[in-house]
Length: 212
Ligand code: ADP
Ligand code: ADP
Image (cartoon, rainbow, N blue to C red; front, side, top):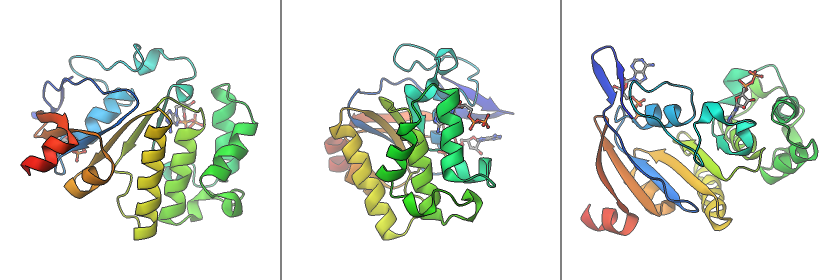
């Protein structure tokens, strides 16, 4: 895929195959094109050239997309006045996800005590848990996590890392991004290094760490 903003090439002919059932990391400094690539996979940005396929289809062509791919999005900012439970109930309804799944993901992410409070008042850590609950709502095979540990305290970082590894153990495909090599070493099986919108390396974590 390629994507320009004005005369800036945000993503410049990026081509990759993401391994199923493993954690792949996009590693690169701020501005490398990680978010733009992920947003194009999710259908939130339109590539100028190329396309991304998730389980063989473009995101826009998926019916009930949340059941195929879950992304870590800022649910707090999108609907600050809603409770987590109501946010999840609404998304479950539009994606034909059973209502009982809402209580499951609230339990899975430890949100029980705040689930009926307005999400606008959540701490960063709770907002992150809500983002993960939302991403997991449809029990998707593919998870897209853009900078999942950014801004979290050490306990939150540990929780997100463990959760990410657990997803891969369950056979899910995880694509995450970070500007930190240390984060990749903790969670990723495979790393795609991006710089100025281009793929600089695409290799197992052992090779990337070994060469750093
Ligand atoms: P990363 O996630 O690696 O930090 P981004 O994908 O956010 O990188 O950004 C890649 C480049 O595209 C940057 O130079 C950024 O300033 C630019 N960019 C990203 N989104 C926009 C936008 N909506 N409008 C203009 N420029 C953008
Ligand atoms: P609303 O119309 O209530 O604002 P959203 O904008 O939150 O709804 O979501 C619209 C659609 O986008 C959802 O039905 C779902 O298909 C998709 N979507 C929302 N959140 C996510 C997510 N975290 N991951 C993947 N897809 C999502």
